[in-house]
Length: 525
Image 1 (spheres, rainbow, N blue to C red):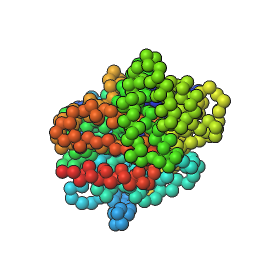
Image 2 (cartoon, rainbow, N blue to C red; image 1 turned 45 degrees about the horizontal axis):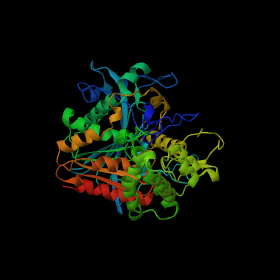
Image 3 (cartoon, rainbow, N blue to C red; image 1 turned 60 degrees about the vertical axis):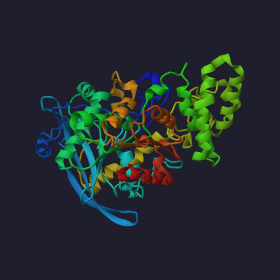
């Protein structure tokens, strides 16, 4: 999703965490980034043993200014789940790793949740959501962990009981899983003041460096340097993925075997110019058309293929012609109206260029509802239907914080028994507010994706999107990958689409398809 700190992208947003939509009177969370730092020379593993003794763990100030006690030692519990009809026994570990500055001083503590299964040659997968300000609970309890809580689909509400149940789409059957909460999310915390934390953690480059080092240190601490290693990131976690992979390869000496990017915020440049370039409108039209097909019960790859072809052909060329070809423009507006099912007057006044937020209000205006940019067919009541602009948060984001927070707090403190004090931040507005932009943030991560794939001829990448996602539209990844050189085997980098939105894995059928596709990536030789 776009970053709240990048004004040119304020039009679009995505999930892994969140971004401010500047047109709202109340600024909702949206996904896209995170926060971070740690210099290559120091970090977690150097004094890992000492740092995990409760007495040696430093105190921290809470968000309310109160002094918090040290983190407890790592806690463990044994659980089981059913995978492909078989009982799988695993160990859950919740604990923390320190972040150190160049002088060895601990400046932050990163909390992780690891699921491991006894056995030889088990791969390990590191998982990150987005932001800035999202914890990893969404991938953990929504997509790939052994337990699941329902959220993110039409009909879900914040007050529904967040009951954990076995996750039929878990990846634990073929890989151990380590979920990482960046500083300021989950229970992870900075041990410096906000000014220093902003410098140390809350920008693109430092984020990549300290999170990469956390992965390195977890591998060292747990004797897993020889394991096959994988990465999965959602939204801004997808932005991080290529950068972390390339940094680990070239700076820390850790090579990933595969990378899965779920609804990634991959190339913000595709959205940066809405005056001349057709790209911003090309990236969203197919997702809006997909939502219309889904409402008609006709969404499938066969029906999407001609829409994608039209978008990258006649639609793009017509937009580039502008007023020089009125007949082509009139035909384009008629076609867009047909593809989207929208009011012809609305499409005409938009010039066939459908702004995301305007569309999400227009499509459900007659019902007094709003669509979500994370899945435009998930709706909520519009409390201010007559306001000139949307004045409330996103329907999905407003609904997912309560169930995921409750489920994770109970799991960590009661089930696993990691008795921690302090607030759990599923989505942190504070991190979003403190986040600042690095010079290369607008460049996205396509360059690092190309370099990482070029560096290792065995590396394989799966980019997974939901058809209906308007926060990180699938067409951005399709266009970006189509411009990449083949580098031997063009199937090493694939883009796949599934029914649903940003969190398409919330739908059981789409989650099953994703798990099957990921399993092929892990099985590839």
